[in-house]
Image (cartoon, rainbow, N blue to C red; front, side):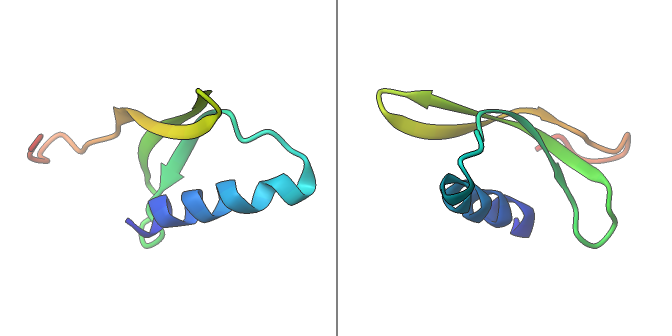
Length: 64
């Protein structure tokens, strides 16, 4: 969850650097440094949205 909050804060701060935030981003667990998900950031109707498009689950992890 912290990674997702970091991503949202990052998206808000990048406008000062004039870099695009749109595209696909990989979230990483802070404790284990393992990939957790791929988030697509896109613009629609003048607003910025993020959508999880892939989850990296362990073989024994409950899908729910």
